[in-house]
Image 1 (spheres, rainbow, N blue to C red):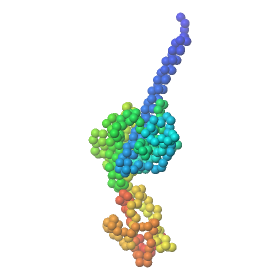
Image 2 (image 1 turned 180 degrees about the horizontal axis):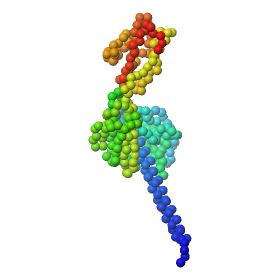
Image 3 (image 1 turned 180 degrees about the vertical axis):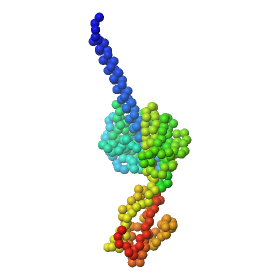
Image 4 (image 1 turned 120 degrees about the horizontal axis):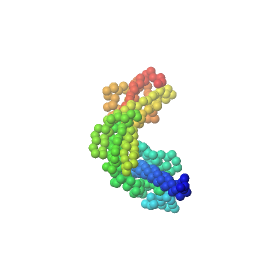
Length: 330
């Protein structure tokens, strides 16, 4: 009886090993492809919903500049509803500053064509760089991507701030989860620390309303056994009064206001040529007061006291009473 491994057995063993490695490689690659597709599908579906809603409310698109691009050969069918001339199509970059600040993986402008655009004709959203898997390239929300994330008639994960304006009150946010999303967990973080803030829970609908600050919502969930996470940052809370400085300009005999600091922006900058009592400040300047032009208050010889009033877009305010008689510089 011969000892050792015959050539035939060795060859069979090698073939089996190659098959096993190939199966593992293909499975890993398919899992990576699916994860990449789902991440992109969820992100661009949120953006498509934003564009649709914005247009319904404003009858215009949230766009910045025109872009004329070459239609990619590996995704030409995805642009088939657009007006293509000589292989080119005209699209418009989306003003993402108008969008609620959902965390984005794509469209951050980190490379050529790493930008989201929209068609003025179809209102379809596209990602010009494309997301590429081992088999396909995706530039928009295709039917197979919709199927993958169960997207149907806006059936997507949604974050809605119930008040869109700046406020110094707690910002109420509604989170709606599609029925198909499984193992959902929601975390609310303030300054990096998790807080208990979900006060009203119905099936697949969550209300967050008890956080005094700009908070981060993190939603973890599973679709088709794929674990995903989407984040939403609230930025419309401001409870800090504006800060400002002023100095006296002797050449122009004027008080010059400078270095106004405020996160929500200034709504009102006024003054009165008299002393306004603290308990009357808000009521008085809501009805009266002289607007400050070019950050300058021109004085005359009869001025003795000036009250300066500044209010921001979240209704925080500050004021200062300036004794004109002995003013030098501040």
